[in-house]
Amino acid sequence: MKTALIIIFLLINIAVYSQTSPEILNGKVSFITSQNIYVKFDNTEGILVGDTLYVAKDSMLIPALIVNGKSSISCVGTPITKNTFILSTQIIAKKRETKKTTKSNKEESKNPELTNDLSVNAASKNQKAKETNEKLDGQLAVSSYTNFSNSYTSSDRLQYNLTMNASHIGNSNLSAESYITFTQLLSFPGKTTDWTGLNNALKIYGLDLKYDFSKTSTLTFGRKIYNNMSDLGAVDGLEYENVDKNFTYGAVAGSRPDYSDYSFNPKLVQFGAFVSHNIHNNNGIMQTSFAAFDQLNNFKTDRRFIYFQHSNSLLKNVDLFSSFEVDLYGFVNGQLTNTFDLTSTYISLRFRPWKKFTTSLSYDARKNVYYYETFPQNKIDSTIDKETRQGFRYNFMYRPFKNFVWGTNAGYNLKSINTGSSENANSYICYTLPFNTTGIITVTGLKTPYLTSMMVYDISLNRDFLAGKVNAQVEYRMGNFTYTNTLIPTRQNIGAMSLFWRIAKKTTISCNFEGTLESNNGIKNNYGSIYFNISQKF
Image (cartoon, rainbow, N blue to C red; front, side):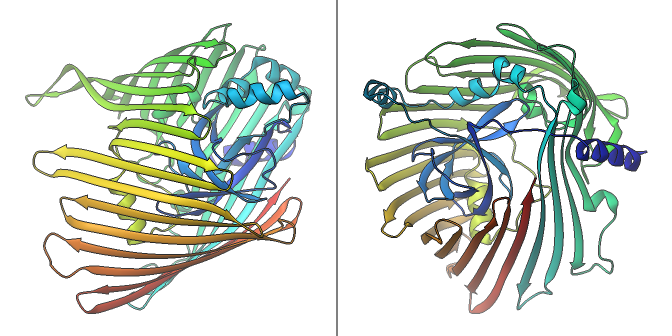
């Protein structure tokens, strides 16, 4: 039954057409380091240093990155929140339009674009009403991953990615979208077959049909992450949504993906409802969402909770985002009972007092993310990612002149009395050199209960060739780890190279190589990874 549904949805997706708004620039994550995310676009005209890049969730665009540097086809950015980024993650930018009059230029410089402004424009009902013809856009990509080492058997795998967005099938009110990956293991230690089963090889992150009853009322069926309930994760089932002038409300009924392999699991039933209030004016947007959900396991209540989210950019140059989860059901003294337990908190305040200076403060007490598919991380990246995810974080970015950006992050996490606290700091300089070359120097420090100290020094160069059709990057990192149970530090030297080539308007090729030389108590380990991707848009 599952296979039949997949085939039906894919045939529907292939048979229809969609379009992307001309004001939107679409890109994808091409390279990931411990502190920066690199995004490739067909071109970056209309994107400025300091702009916000977004990830799409339903009809809303969620702030994801702040642009620190750019070339003709690439941007490097710092994550605003701890979103999960993997290679080929779709990133969206809003192309800035050039004003025709001198007065307009001055007004625009005094009123820089705020983080939530793009979300308002993307979710505009007027924009939706204009898109009434059947159209299709999507991307098919094939990637290869190879990991090798002198201490373990190498592994090789292929991954096939398909994304589609179909709008108004047959000029009707029916639309569809999908995001599907399939992984084939060519060689893997301990595995005798070239894959580990359909549910492990096939990952369906999104596959749904949407029917518009009217311009304001929709019904969605399939697997989807909904923007008003993004913290809930993917839902397999039905979602009804109605958009009024200032209110959006709806209900969801379905199940959660299986914990082990992300497959369909009808035993993990969940249902709930939400309401959202939106205010739009010339300064920005204020959005408040409230949701209540009941999650079951084998048809017994597993979790009952409420979710609250608020974002506000009505004040000039100030952007606030917050989300909270409260569990209403749990164990107290070994017995099931109703409770009121704050289990998840995230608050972020971003302030831009001057055009060239941006600062933010955040507090993150959300649960750690578990990755189902991601590009393998080295020890430096995985340690920094784990230890800086939660706690208090302060950030500022200063652009004193056109080609220079300086940014700093500092974080503190008081885990518990038993485990102790951790502190981290990071500072980077980004400078645009002649001949379309960008250089970035980064220094990172980290201290945790099991790490006496960790220092990482990073330098990278990025350059465009052939009128922006080819982009190359080289990077070197040196890391020193000193663990609390040993006096001898672990040293790592990491070299990385990446190449991106736009061989046609909709066809790209990219490859990345990373090699690590590690010395630990006189024992030397060498390992690395190679990534190759070819992508075709349609």
